[in-house]
Picture 1 (cartoon, rainbow, N blue to C red):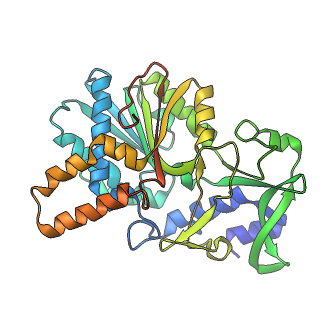
Picture 2: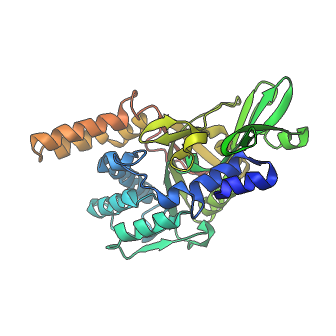
Picture 3: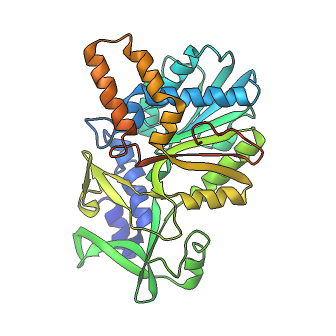
Length: 357
């Protein structure tokens, strides 16, 4: 028996969030601890893997914010969930090439997976100004720019659903007492449990709710950094904004949606973020939000096409073709352009809005 099966055997059922947490992060079983996950040979592909021009646009945004806050001598860049380290590597290389930037920067990386930390350290071996932090509150008090690409969508989530005026928590149990097969199991909850989520959803009109565990802890920490460090937070992810919940949880393997209960030991598990949850928590902390806007809108406003024109002038036909295909993947509304969204969070007196208007 693996760890999930042992827990079900002991407790009869486990909540969905615990199931996801073990399936993704357990040292022996966890997907992020043991599998090849990135790129065309992995299970999913991210924007920085498609083209470094994505990271270049983020670099332009970072330097523009540095200019907005009066060009401090040194800043922090904190990335949440750096994956294989490719995006931050591209960003560091790109910033160094921007002539208007004459400051210095520390880089902090926050990563939960020990395996990915090892990969990051290998890929970033040439850079000396990188510090890995388990607790993001431990960074110094320099002006801080926080970035995250597809970070929150990997959080374990609780899921609740309504049947005949009763609410249940989605759980996992053995199927018909067969200890080799698992299935969904509904555990009835009371109004006290449900009330916690009423600030994010219209409970009366919703039939399903999803809530990422520990997101409030992270957002509170990010809020403190923004306030203390004259900071800003830029994130990209897929999601929606609504007081009505949706069933968005899914398993991804080899770039395809697969059966979660059959493939959970060998697949990514993800969901669509309800951006309202982030907005409400940040607002409570007196942090303002800008967006969401589509990734297409953001990258176009940052000048991705103008940058492509500059690159094309110096390249051969094959490189030009690949660049055009990559940019199309990033901004085409039918590809990642409208699926992914950009949001920024900052102090209430901050007027910096590059990429959002």
